[in-house]
Amino acid sequence: MTAELTNTGTDPHALLPARPVDPARFTDESLYAATRLPVDLASTLLPDAYSSPEFFALEQEKVFAGGWVAVGFASDVDRPGACAVVEVAGRSIIVTRNRHGELRGFHNLCRHRATKLLDADAREVGKRGRIRCPYHNWTYDTDGTCLGTPLFEDSDVPAGEETIFDTSVARGFDRADYGLLTVAVDTWGFLLFVNLAPDPAPLAADLGDLPARFADYRLEGWVPQRRSTYDVAANYKLVGENFMEYYHLPWVHPELNQVSKFSDHYRWQGPGKYTGMCTTPVSRNTEAGGWDGLAPLSSLGPQDADAGRFVWLFPNTALVVLPNHTFVLLNRPVAADRTVETAVLLTHPESLDDPDAEAGTEQLAKFWDLVNRQDIEIVERVQEGIANPAYRGGRMCFRFEEPLHRFQNMVIDKMVGVDRVPGGDEDTMTRMFPDP
Image (cartoon, helix red, strand yellow):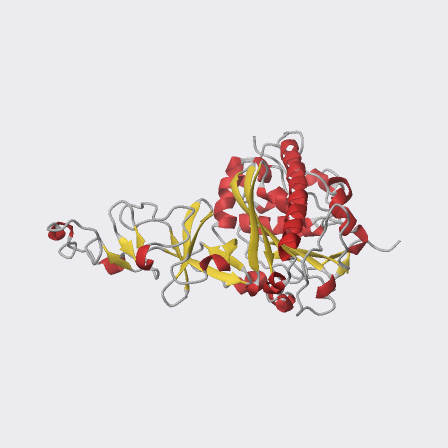
């Protein structure tokens, strides 16, 4: 059945396509007419975007294989030979530093027979800073150069059999042509990014004004202190859209609502592929916990020192930056209805000088675990509902859900092949809950 877009009156909801949608239309701009409307008229992204395996497969290619994706932390590759093995759009990627300390990225496969080179839990590339294939011992340097195939120093070729493995006599073969397949990598602050596109634009183009907005936080020095993994039975976009709005706080997060009041929320968005909001002033802890517990960073000006910044980096990363800690959610989509979250709590080095730093860090970790589990429960309920064919989409709540509208239109852009970086609000901070 092919959905038809019809509008029989003034109701924008009439623009929503019937279900199911023909997967051949997922790259058709007209399919998204209801979401392309201004936010005060717009309806949500079509349900197939959260439930269809065909949409998921196409999204992996167009969104995740076609742009910058945050995959980890710069501290994981802080020296030559250290590595992180990450997954983007179903591809395994090795990120490391060569002997000169330069960041490098490679597809995690041997150029001989495509054997996976390193396991997902690898933290070092291998002995003597070399990457070896476990199948036929082809070996690579951390700059991607093929060093041997496999006859070379310390190759473990049995004594007396060296000539058997000598590839120098092979016709039409030059190992210089068989280095590892490269991937673009970069960092911003403490985050590590990968881009699978063959000729990507600079990461800075996507980040927009975020480096300037966060300059006083000196994010490059913050260090991961706690890591947790959550298996979420929901589409990654539902995780993100839940993060982008505070409409749900009173009902889903009674504890968080006490330290993140409706009236203290502002939209905080400039040009860049992100959505952002801010809370100020930073509220003190209650008996249920909160954001206190560690000393604030001394380099912050008055505005940053009393604010919490909540940014969703397109397409998959939640970034919460407060004066005394940072909470990050890296969301890896593994199916239309399943996401693996890596939650990381980071602190700045000044906090570690405090004798109560361990207790403060533990309190923050417990508070964020509570908040995140509450979010997971509700987005899984949304996923169950969105699978019902009766649901075609709903209206945006314009006062609270403009960031969702911004995000959903970034997704649409990638699906239909539009290359665009969203602009910013005219005001640096836009109050989202007007005074009575």
